[in-house]
Amino acid sequence: MFTDAFLQARVVNWDEQAPLMLSSFRCDFARASQSTDIPDLVNKLERVSPEFKLWWRQHQVHAPCNGVRHLLIDEQPVPYEFTSLTVDEDRHLRLVVYARQKEQSGHHE
Image 1 (cartoon, rainbow, N blue to C red):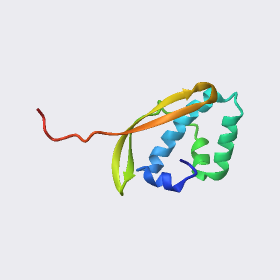
Image 2: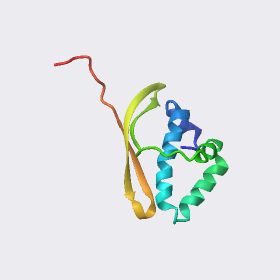
Image 3: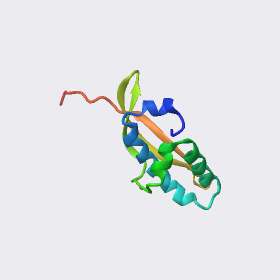
Image 4: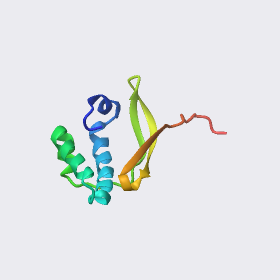
């Protein structure tokens, strides 16, 4: 997300959402700090993404990665619920699943 402008452009309010994504990643980093691949990834991202470098050095930690995020689909913001799942804790693999929110009708029955 921090190295691909195309993906960044799909996230509504990127400047607000990206630090939240990064702070969730920080939780994973803290658990995996014994492993060299995670600090290597952080170093690489700091070299290629000024935003990542700035926000990483702010040391913010956020709640678990879940909630609602709006993505641009056909130039329209569409709400998606998302949650983060641990796929393989030993290898520090996490899967973030996005599911389009159901549209709420104005009808109350």
